[in-house]
Image 1: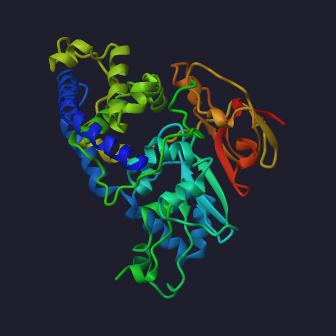
Image 2: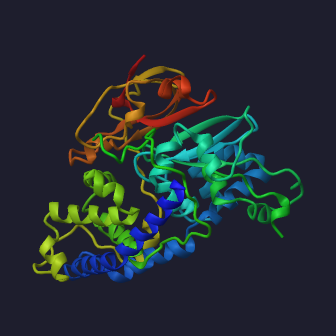
Image 3: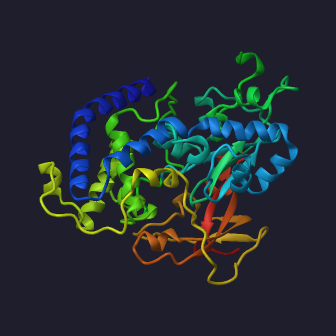
Length: 211
Length: 218
């Protein structure tokens, strides 16, 4: 019940902020434009890039490649930035991208308890829950409880490793390849890779879940 | 600073609530705020840790009650006022009342693809690394009133150096306008029980990315 009430409260807050924030940000943009600090067309281009070009489809390609190409996987785990750049899905990759591998004995989860650090280049901008107090507070001391919020249950003998992104290193989880996907193409495998499985709050889809 | 932004291990915030098919931005003003922050950062008006510190200084009640991009918006207003780049009176008027100050550069449409890539925070080392993988370290018991990236839950705790990540810009100084002062950065891993006591999940390990000044030998 508490959870329902909180959700409702959040919606109300969101609604009441809408008009005030629209006006406030419009004023801010006008002032900064008039002062010659920003070009609104550049702002449009930033927004378009994050709405249409950058997103978890990039990370999904990286994961699918790692599932099919052992030498790429090795390179990815050795130096994430270098390997992703070599893959050529995106033209540039910033430094310090680190891929961490899930195994039957170890499950990795990514969090930023202090703010919202997230591997934008391969996953796009983070979802609201990733930046929210419940996730930031509980991921480090109740990861199984957090996973339960996602409907995810890990085997009890799987150890959990949580990576708190407290610096400018960025992490992406390399999930386990689902069984029953032998001989699948990279493209088809990529369709199994969800955003959440690359954060460690989900598993890839099963073969029967995609057409 | 020991603010409410430092949330690791706190209780009472409730369940995580994933949203199905969540849009990148929920409202237009969120997208504009996001883009404004990036455009001003491109102008070299402030760096990423100065932006973080501005949001950390919001009052705890405001921080907790504000949506994510509202915090960004309030942070940018504070930074603009602190730096004398735009005043509260101008934001109320909705127009510039004074000419802008000259900035180092201005983001153009053509430059946008370049800022989608993260910059590098690696810098040449000032001295050799003090620790190596496998070393046991204790994080310092510090409570600076200024910006730090050593979370409260991981202070005065014993862990093991797992990896050396290179030498990076030091957030604790750069956020305060005191220079980059590059420091070695390590992944330090802790047993769940070292952090949370006997009630911790037995298999849990948690790591932080720790700058060398946060660490001493254990």
